[in-house]
Length: 211
Length: 209
Image 1 (spheres, rainbow over the protein chains, first blue to last red):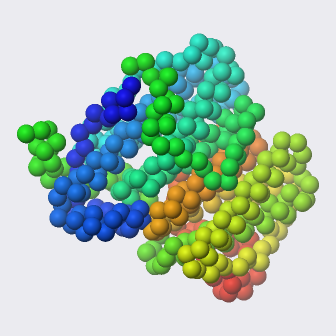
Image 2: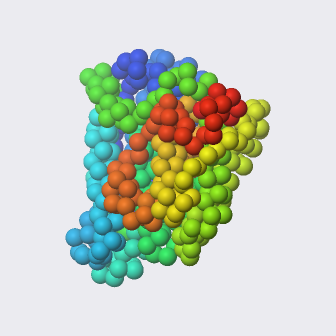
């Protein structure tokens, strides 16, 4: 799957009021958007629309990853592959991923974009029947999600979207640490979270995407 | 005419303020006077990291844990040390003056395994909320990236310590589907009991909180 194929959202947004404009300017300062862009943004012209196109693309990228995680955990929890304390720890993760899908979808809609549709997913044999395979795959997804969100931190232009993405990213970090603990991995691989580019993440997710 | 051009022309009908409402409610902006510069934000973070670093130094020295648990808190302590070093270096690199480590008093925190971990759980969740609440003030994108990266690691610490305590997964290990930012006043209030002496609140490092 080519990187662009999953982003069929039509992104449109423009500053509707002073609140949004101020937020944009604040954010423009935070990420070091070139001064020419910040100044041009006042015109409410194509420059600002372009900036927000990229945010909607990032939101749809995040939504695609959340679809994958939500699908994965729903299958795992429904299939009864884990039990006891492990089930107790994994069930809220499923709920969180469902909530992330819902929040990202409504946010994209509210911003005037079009949420991508969920791909169909496929998983290696044994993923939902062998506990170790399930938890290890979960661990891979969570670490991938963490690096994916952190890889977009400096690219998100709207401060509110950044805040929401960060608030989700922190939860993915919690998931990642718990799954590392459950699988005998290292919950604290580094003092600072790692980053990955969209291209790297989509390459890693590709084997799980059927269509 | 392509679809995007058409929609752009009619974008005025989309109430963006409504669209952003959900997002904005998660973003607890502290008062704009809270942080005047990136150095201010970094010194605020540094004070919290000093607090955590010293907390784990004392806690790990107390020998309350063993096996995997001891290894985890050693690693967490090393993470906090690394945060102190990285933030100090960053402040100096951008021409600021790092605050000094505050005098601390952890009271009865190291009386038992549970009290150590329960206090750690409070600190870690406080750190998560503090970073998220302060992130919007950071102007330099490299610093923002680093702060976000530290924030995520504090969330890892919080979750694992919650699990070591066998807390309820939701509300103990995880704190909902999104993290909740805390503003400076709330963080200060929560940290105050651990900063030794009334003087610490008005002078020295704690004054930057």
